Amino acid sequence: MMDYRLENYQDQWIHQVIHMDQAVCYCPEYRASKMLHDYPSRRLQLAWAVYRGELPLSDRIGEISFSSILSRQGERWQNFRECEEDCTDVTILVREMLLEKGYQAPCVKALHEALAAGHGRLYPEAAAWDLPLDTASDTAVLLDEETASFAADCAGAFKGLFDRKQMAFANKAEVYYLGFEYFACGLVAEGKAHLKALIESCQAMGVSKVLVLSAKAAYLLRTFAPKLGLQVDFEVLYLPELMDPIPVRQKTYVYAGSFNLRYLRNEALLNGLIPAASGEKVPESTEFTPLLQGDGRVNCLTIWQKPVGAEYETFGADGALAEAIACDAFSDMEKAGAGQIIVFEPTALTKIRERFPEKQVFYYTEV
Image (cartoon, rainbow, N blue to C red):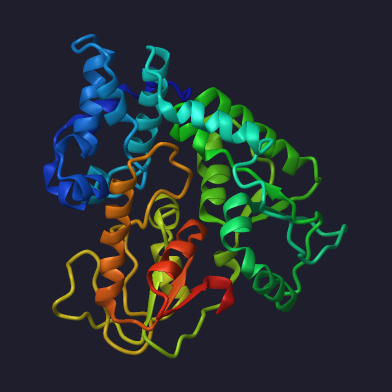
């Protein structure tokens, strides 16, 4: 495997800057700002010019390069079925390059300050959960900060699910910071050190399996760690993969999130987990995010589902842009006309509950 350095991603980078503007209408940043520099190929083309010395580095180019929420929505791979990893990898490595060239990204200072204030955590208020414990178990549980914080009122539902499945864990469900923000801020070396320590803490438990509760945790351990040359000597289990189908008896919209749909490509898994009453599409629904007939799951989960927002802390992000991105996703939920929404992404749970107080909004373990 090649080293995770920008000089090793030249072909991928060149490929990304080739204009493919038919996907611009799906890019959440462009849909919110209507500014073409927010489209992935244009952002990376500006950075390419800086890298080659064709443009001087400026704060404006830095701001543009750091503006994406890394949702993987509206990138060229979706139209051409190319590797979904390339644009994210190049974006992260470009941000690292711009920092090395002297760009003072506000998110870097803010991230360091937040971690210092939280003693290594971004959500220090998130508490450990009471999950089944069995020191003889061959499986540990990794409770990530986002799940522990945003889905805190679902801890009992998780415990009930594990009790019914007769699952117990070798460790207490303490809260772990995953560290994706390091990479999103271009701090690759710091992120690698943090992820290495996280993996080693899991390996020190002496188990053969680690159950993760979020798609982001599954992605970091299964896909991203090997890119960094980090060895994971245990099997990574993701909870929805172990669950039986969830029957629904009313029109239900399912929000899966970017890490599920575009990082892990779990669209088939989640479509199967919450069955639709019918595969018949609503005629007036959109091409890539079709609505379905009947009293069951009313949306077909695809790689095109709009993100409610970034699934990590975006320190210093444009609030108006973030709100516009969220409202764009909410509009699809409104069009579905469902009375119930089931959410698989912890960071979106509170946002969706606040936006739709009249609907029943559940985290997936609650149903």
